[in-house]
Image 1 (tube, rainbow, N blue to C red):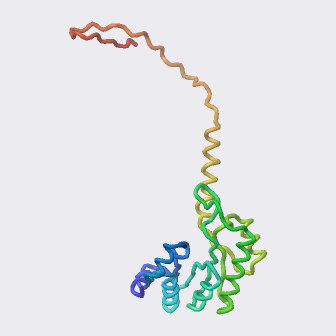
Image 2 (image 1 turned 180 degrees about the horizontal axis):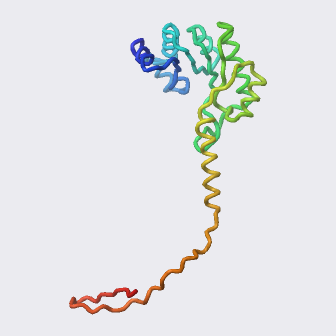
Image 3 (image 1 turned 30 degrees about the horizontal axis):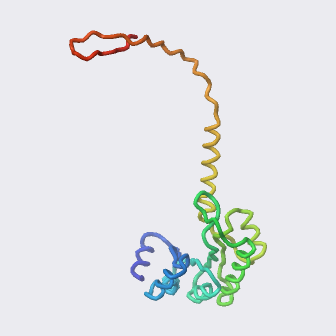
Length: 202
């Protein structure tokens, strides 16, 4: 991992994030990954190493315990992940309420700050998919802000494309002012071949 992180730094990057993250997986598959040594603790170890190597570290966490683990690892910015973002053509259909998201975000923030009072905390995902949603969460949870993905790069684009395409489709096409030359009826063309050939005379 250290060699990989060096390559990331040499490529010009100064920050690290634990994404894709196993935190998005649950159930039997998650348990199997944990049992085979591919659990969330590996992501914590990566963040700790990146912190030692002077990267700016950001980490998705899904509960207060993971927030404490990442804060202990020296993570600079905790990203309170509320699940797949709702909305748009391919967004999640079911998620927690906005109030539940605010409460969970606050618990995550408190857990992280119990280890490092100066850690940055941002919210992300789930029902938090619009500026008004973010505003509501910020009113209820004492955090620094929001990190957007689908809510910034996908949903607004989908809306814009749909609305613009609908406007094009609604346009009425007027009758063309150009007059086409009338086509004469088909006439029989004499041929030496046994089959009859028909053609068009202009």
